[in-house]
Image (cartoon, rainbow, N blue to C red):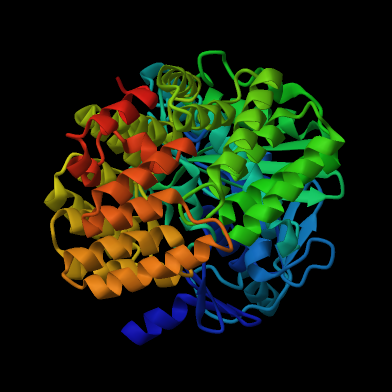
Length: 625
């Protein structure tokens, strides 16, 4: 009997099968992700193959009366997702035929004996019913439909009176990566860019927590259910949707879902020409905001969002952002090219300058090996130009703050960080960077508070790396090691966490462990000079001085043919206990405003030099005294 019941719940068509009991769609035995509403629509169509199922019938069966939706858009979205899952086409359908203004018909043959299946086939086999019976059936059906509509309206009135119609309260939100429906994988940069823009706009509210990009992008093309994603991100609202681009025309469909119960609250579709894409983004975010009753930031949104932008300019910008997020050296070079192309085509487009600033800033980080005296002025100039064009561009405030901190203009940098957070209270990057600023000042507890807030806003971005560095700076080595190992348990090859763990292990005098960790970082970064300098420190601490000196010789040879950061030699000589050489390289690091010099006030490795009057002079020069 169990086997018979199981067989009745399986419906098959083509290479697909639907399990009505488990709510699963499978293709040749492989489960295909399909959300609840498209699945329910498919179930209704499969139960009446060959029959026209009207839109009103689908509405009454699958859209409860207490759900706020634009029904037409919601049904269209469900059908589109269903066709996408089945590989079907509206123009040349194999499974689902559209009857304009009427409904849909499932045109493929269906095998199986699920409840209600093949009702039309059964009627055909039984032969034509007498005319008066057909009239009775029709009248009975109309009576049922009228009763359903009557009671639906009664319940709506009841719910309005009692307040039950109000949707669930949403206090936290995640925007999942918008699906690219163009059919062209090369357009992924465009759908990702639309996702970024939507997150950026929604992050401007202070009344709802909005999860940052790094975390949500981990769910691109995931098979996880919405309630599962919501639990992992600790949110109650989910935005998901699609982007469809045809030439210079863009359509975005977005829907708001109360994630704990997978309840659809709202859906809408927006169409614009590509030149009006900034207005399109603003319309979508404002539509979402209205549904959850929030305002987009203290100014009620980005005033620059309504300007027109040439399609070629915006495409270059989005391609630049796509490469910037990749983060490899080759990708950063491509990002520079795309951002510059956007600027050349439209010198008034502020976001391209902000992207340029971020790229130059990334090129100047520890593993890139670019001289900061070359990259920092370019980042500073690009961020300044972006803010000249758009004073409320959050990304530009963050980049300018970083450049000011690198230049030891501490108060100006703090003002820029605070302005960025004021404009976008949910921006995890602004919180994390301000935490670093506080750490440089020795304000450990405040720094930890802001870093943990960044972690809440971007839970899968592994901000434990930042927390680990703050704890190392405070000489809380064991705590730092635990925090960094927790990060590495999730992402074993995360270079930043391995790098900081090397520092913490040296601080805790666990030199052999530090050597193992730093050798991994060295391999991952193609023997970065910065990593080699720290390796010398670890080898010296472990009593393996000869091996450390051999690496130091390699650094000196490299310096004859290319750039080696002074901080690499500084770390090496600190480990070797050579104070005079350490002071020499400290002076050179100060001259080029090395990133390590931001931590002059608090860096534990500099403790052996602090009693020397020369060190006090360096602190004054870096505006710490």
